[in-house]
Length: 223
Figure (tube, rainbow, N blue to C red):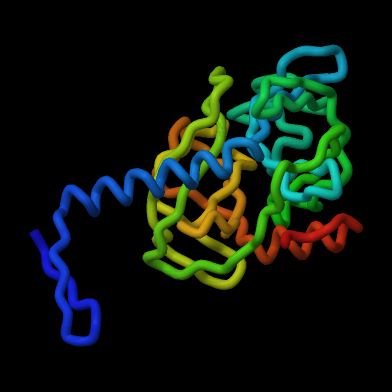
């Protein structure tokens, strides 16, 4: 049992089990808030051959846009050239609905590693961007390859500098394009790709770069 000073000369007893339960409940609330926004992206060649699986998310209640990773455009497997060239995209939403989606824009040379797709439905709730600092608790969300349900892992910001964020959290390659959010459910970045099959040190495009690219592409920015 721990004791916390509440002010006004008052102390309160706090049991570790209560803290753990509250933390677990909050983690689930973050996932439940973000899950309806998550979109699995399937890439195909022009002749319909599977060319990769990625993650994305909706962010605007007034536009039908999906944010994902720019490196999925023209993706040809790992190592490069080992799979068909990705040129056509399909989205699967949280409720299981699937549709072909249009590529609106992707950053040249993957700087930033952001692509914008357009589907037929807006986000159920808006996404707000936020900055982060080293040591902050964050959550990485995305889809593992061949899984239809989204995955969720908790970690920390291991480094944060201008133009780059690294987090320590579990993520598979299929997470690329998925959101990273803070404990207040605000977007701090978008997961980039990795050369390994599994990522524990994850590179992230900062939310401010996502916001700027959206505006430069003529699309609404983050809230």
